[in-house]
Amino acid sequence: MTEEKTLLIEVRDLHKSFGTLEVLKGIDENIYKGEVVVVIGPSGSGKSTFLRCLNRLEEPTSGHIIFEGADITDPKTDINKLRQKMGMVFQQFNLFNNLSVMDNILIGPTKVKGLSDEQARAIATRLLERVGLLDKSDAFPSQLSGGQKQRIAIVRALAMEPDVMLFDEPTSALDPEMVGEVLDVMKALAADGMTMVVVTHEMGFAKEVGDRVLFMDDGVILEQNVPYELFSNPQNPRTQDFLSKVLI
Amino acid sequence: MIIFEIFTDYYRYFLRGAQATILLSLAVVFVGSILGSLLGIMRLSNNRLFSGFSKLYITVIRGTPLLVQLWIVYFQLDFIKYPDWVVLGMDFERLAPCVIALSLNSAAYVAEIIRAGIQAVDKGQGEAARSIGMTQGQAMRTIILPQAIKNILPAIGNEFVTMIKETAVVQYLGITDLMYNNGIVVTSTYNPLPCYYISAIIYLILNLVMGHGIDLFERRLRNSD
Image 1 (cartoon, each protein chain N blue to C red):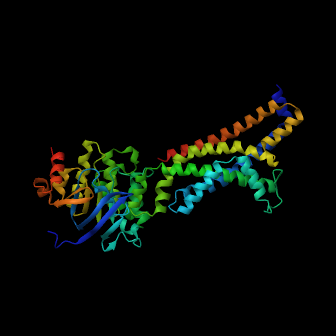
Image 2: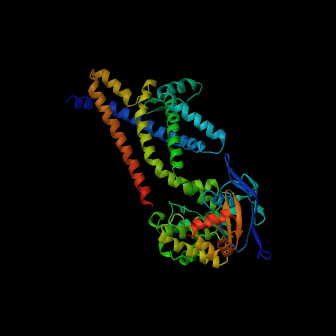
Image 3: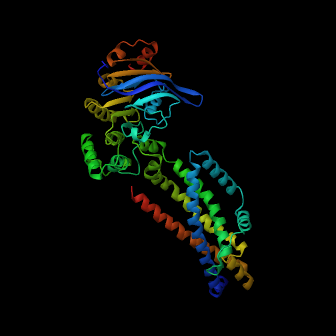
C-alpha cells in the first residue's frame, strides 16, 4: 500500500535516553504523506517521547529523522523552520494563557511565518468556523472548557499550514463528554488528507481513522498493522496482553 | 506633644533626609532591577559560564551583610575619579559608591525573584511556542515573560520595600539621608525617642506609597486578561 506514496518522515535507528534510562531503543519507521498513523502502547513505553523527538522537542540521543529531505537531528538544520511545517497538539493543550483565542492563532502565522495580519486573520477565521468556535475569538483560554481549548490548540497548529500534525494524547486530559468533539475535529482533518501521527489511548479512534497502528512497548515498535488486523489478530504476546486489558 | 514640637521645629531636616532617601531608593531600584533582570536571565541560561557566574554572585551577595558590601565597594572603587557634583547637598563621590553597592546587593535578590517567576510558568507554554517555530528568544519575549511578570511583581514590590529601608546604611558613609538627619535632630534635642518615631513614620509612608504604586500596576496587568 505504501509503494506509490511519498515519504514524509523517515526515522532511522532512533535512540533516546534520559540519563541512564533508555526510553527509545532503536526505532525505524516511515511516515508517508496523507497517512494517519496511530501509536498505542502502555504508559512508559516511549510513545510520547517518540512523538516529541519527531519535532525535536526532545533531543534524540542518536539516530536520524529525515523530514522532507532535511535531517532534523543535524545541529546545522534550522529546526524552527521545520517546526513551522510540523503542527503539534499537546495533552495539556498549552494554549498561550496571556493571549486571547484569536491572538493564540495569529501569533504563529504573523510573528513566525511573516504573514500579514489580514492574511492570518482570514485563515484563523476559516479554521475557527470549521471547529465551531468563531464566537470565542476574543475569549481567553481560562474561559474555555477543555474540549474547546483542545480544538483551539488544533486550530493554532493548523494555522501554520503544516504538512504533518503530531498529536500527543490529545484527549487524555479531557472530561469524557468532551472527548467526542475533539475526535470529530481530528476525523475531519484525516478525511481532508492531513498526515497525522497520533499517540492515543482511544482505540475506537485508532480503528476508525487510522491507516496504520503501531504498538510500542519498552522503547521499540513491537508490532504494526492496519487497524483491523492489529486489533482482531495481534501476533505479539505483549500486544495481545495489552489489547486484552484495554478492550474489555 | 513633644513629637509634634520636634517635628515643627526640625521638619526641614526630616524632609531633606526623606528627599535624599527617596532619590537614593529610586536610583537603586532602577539600577538594581536592570542588573537583576540580566543576572536572572543569565542564571537560567544554558551557557554554564553565565549561569555559574550568576549563581556564585547571588550566593556571595546573599551570604554577606549589606554594610560590609558597602564598605568594600567604597574602598575597592576608590580609584574611580567621580565628578565633583553635589546632589541634594550630598557629595557625588560618596553617593555613587552607595548607589553602586546597594544596586549590586538588590540585583542579587531581584535575580532570584525573576528566576523563580520565569520557572513558575508552565513548561508547556514554552514548548507550544517552540512547536510553532518560535525561537527561544521569541518564546521568551512573547509568551513566557508576559506570564512571568505576574508572578514577579508582588515579590519585586517586597524587594523594593526592603531596599527603601536598607538605604539607611548609607548614613555610615556620611550620606545625608533620613537616618543621618535623624541623628542631627537627636543630638540637637537630646530626645531620641520622638525622633525615631518621626523617622519610622516617614519610612512607613514611603513604603505605603510604593506598595500602592505596585498594586495599581498589578491591577492594570490583571485587567489585560
